[in-house]
Image (cartoon, rainbow, N blue to C red; front, side):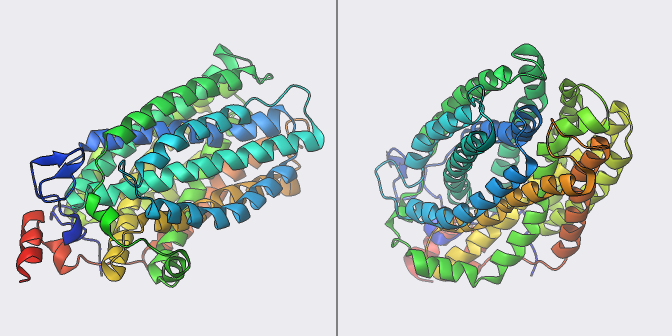
Length: 480
C-alpha cells in the first residue's frame, strides 16, 4: 500500500461528501451536508494554537532552569508525571469531544472554552512569584506546566479532528494543511524567534523574569482572539453528529489493536521529540555553545522558520506529484542529515547556514506528517463506521507527550554526563552539553525515524473515497 496522490480529489466517505451549494441554515446545505469552510478560516486557527505552546516549548527551560535555578532532575520528574497523567486524560478528552452534541457542533464549544483556559495557565506558568525556590518552585512549575499542556491537548485534539471532516478530499486537505502550517510558521517566528528579544531586551533582561510574564500576557490575548475567530467561522458536517456516539473502552481497544496507530505514532514521535529538543534548547545553545547573547537566537530561529515557510509551497507540489508517503520519507532523511551541520557550527553565520537545511527538512515534515495521520483516521472511519477523530487524535497525543518525557530525560542526562544541573550550576562545559542536546540527540532520533518510515505504509483510498463528492452521493441514493 502507498499514499494516495493528492492530485486525485477523493472524499473520506460518502457520509461526508460536500455536494450542495445552497444552505438550509448555518453550517448546513440543502442535502444535510456541511457548508464549505474557507481553508484560510480553518488554517488561521493554527496561528492561535501555536503561539502559546511554542513560547512554552522555547522558553520554559531558560525561565525555570537557567534563570530561576530549578534543578534539571526536578524538571525531568515533572515531565514524567505529566506523561502518566496525559496518557489517562487524553483519550477521555477525545472521547468526550466525539460524543458532544450541541447546535454549535462537536468541536467548536471545546475550542471556544479551551482557548482562555490555555491562555490563563500559560500566563501563570511564566508568572512565578518572586522568591519561590525549592519544593515551592517545583510545585508551581508542575501545576501550571501540566495545566498548560492539558488545555493544549484539548485544543489540538479538537482542532486537528476538524481537518479530515472539513476537507474530505485530499487535494482540499493538502491545501488547508499547507495553509495552516504556514500560519504555524508565522506564529513560530513570533513565539520563538521574537520571544528572546521581547523577554530579555524589550520587556526584561537576561537575568530577570518580568519580561516573560509580559510577553505571555501579550501572546495569550492574541491566541484567544484568533482561536475564537476561527472556531465561530468553521462549519462542521452535521452528518457526523448524526452518527452513533463512540464508546470509550471499545474505541480505545480498537485503536490500540490497529497496527497503523503504533507504526505511524512511533515513527512520528521520533520527529516530534527531535523538534521539541531543538525548540526547547536553541536559546541555551546560542548562549553556551555559540557564546552569544540569548537575543541572537532570533537570527538562527528566524532562518530556520523562514526557510521552512518558503519550502511549504514546494513540498506541497511534490506531494501532489509523488504522494504524501514518498515525500514524508524524503523529508525525514533531509531533516536527519541537517543536524550534523549544527553540531559543527562555531559561530552565528555557520549555525544559520546549517539551520537553513534544518528548515528544509522540517518544512517537508510539516507538509506531510498530518496527511499521513489523516489517512489513518480515514481508514478507521471507513472500517468501523464511526467518526471518532477526537479519540484517535488524543490517543496519538500520547506519542506527542513523549516529547516532555524525553526532553526531561535528555536534560537530566546533561547533568549526568556534563555536569549541567541549572544556570546556577552549569558544569565545566555547558557548550558541549547543549551541542549534544540540540544536535546529537535529534540526529539519532530522526535517523531512526527516517529508517523506520521506510517500513510504514498507509491505506489506499476505498472505492467510496475514490469517487468525487457528487458521484458518491449519487451512489448512496441509488444504491448502485
